[in-house]
Length: 204
Image: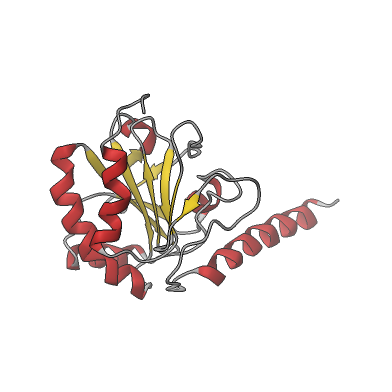
């Protein structure tokens, strides 16, 4: 295979993955689903929020890189705290609808050991910074303009985020405890965080 043909193949593969994500982006679906391939022990309630019991939770892959404000962040460094990961884009109307809830919860729960991290994907950096300013977002967002973190930062299959917005909660051991594939109300967001916050690292 020639170098140029191999290069075209890689580009097509990357394009297909990005297109697959785009199909579900900002769908505003009222219900979350387990989705994806492979086996999962996620239990999805009527609100579309999926949870996993301790002992059956996978860890995300590496989630690290440059933040929107030019800093560096590695989610693995937050182990020991409950971490809320929110995938968003400035172009996404459901993301705008849920942003005030995330801002409020992040401010109130940080003293309790909850850290919020955004993953800003397929977005314009300047417009995304304006989004953060408009909604007074108090936490950093990894800048993921080509969707690489979304595609590679999570285990393949059912736990991989498949819509924008999506939200995942990591327990204190750094493992995925809950996930929603939709915009969240404040009550729904807190319902994902509260049970995980009540757990102890490495315990039940």
